[in-house]
Length: 326
Image (tube, rainbow, N blue to C red; front, side, top):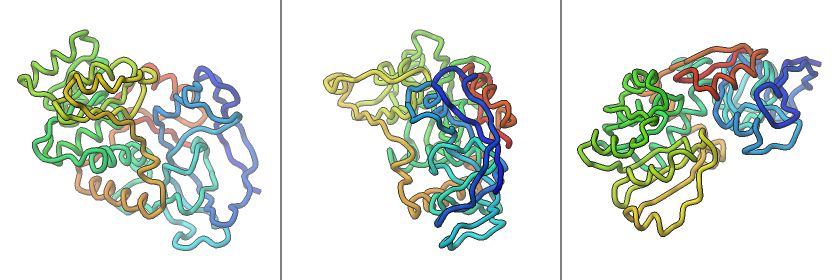
């Protein structure tokens, strides 16, 4: 029997409710693969689940994405071999661990152009950017986009990739010190959300032109005013809630603001089956190979300091992605 170290959540609450335990890990079941994980990703949804905003049955693990090396195969697994480098982002919660059994259909084999660290920090966020740019709205050259949290993990990927597609991106940040990171990612202008008149600052920066798409990962503090930044018949995409759950929007308000479209998508339905997931991942890997999507690791933490990861994320200490090392 193999042992593993795993982060566990037994109650909802502050970061300190997370603990790391050692437990037995059984051999992989039919259709499963056992992975020695080398890099683990952090995402804001982990905080929503830890606090109970998105409640899970307790006790539970946390974390959605990781990369590592295949150590064992369960019966019936084909197309994956011991020693393969693999990654996942939709195998259910529990990525905060040094070893894990994962359904083979949830895995993608990593090409030589993508490192383990890149996969663990880019797969969930990059696949989020992929559906936002390819499916929610097929971004075209000449589109004007407003990207909230442009210095964050998804925000930087979204900005770089959209810019490579020929769009113009205006970003927002919640801290002036993150301005440089957003500009480096490709933003034409960066708006400080601490300015109470930030929608007017956005319009001044664009010469009065409104955005074809507003990508809002903040939620409660920004969504209603994001509507003021969308062009007539434009799209407002609410895909996160870093400030809290987004408010309800009356349909008539969308009419008054310019016959707007409002959507609340998520990454998992866009990658619900193995074939679609792997095709979307291949699109992301191509963007990485082309340099349109790059690794920006803001901080690294050991698994034993998992509570510190959540504290740093809530305090928004770092731009870019945060990496957990087993």
